[in-house]
Image (cartoon, rainbow, N blue to C red; front, side, top):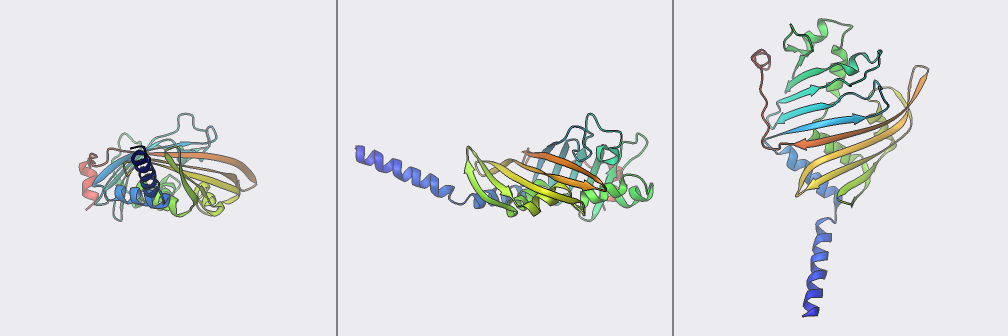
Length: 242
């Protein structure tokens, strides 16, 4: 009897080890499963230097499998006077090549990104355009983070890996900013094959003009309401999406 119990325990342990023999495959499968959902929501929070223009307020998003996506970008609580557009609250609707913007103007409605830019060339339009150029919904971003991570391992209920210096640089400051001493880590949480949360931390020195700033940024994305998310498209936005 003792031999049978011991053998069963050994087989169970071997089975569990086999299930998690390839952490990258686990995360890939969870990200793909999320991408295949009919819809889902997410909540993104960014923690960085207090009041930094590089640390935006939280983002709430929704996406459908047909590509319709809604993003609500909240302002930070205590923005710096020179933070300008990075602290601007915005609503964005996207479907295919169509990108619509709703800025915090009580008399305004939804408008195309092109019109939003044209209405004020010195305004936030180019900032929004650049933001959307680099934006990825969570399923795609999780997959991208996995690709640029190294030594992924399962420990204490999550999958953790290191980001390459080049990857950390791009996450710190997309574009042509000068970044040095960049480093980063990524972490994924999976429950019953479902990606429930991921987090990436990046640090480095960002140079803008003659000013160098040490940045330590922690971005957390929580997945919510998979299969139970709905996007309501206002009538004025619906006309512009078709």
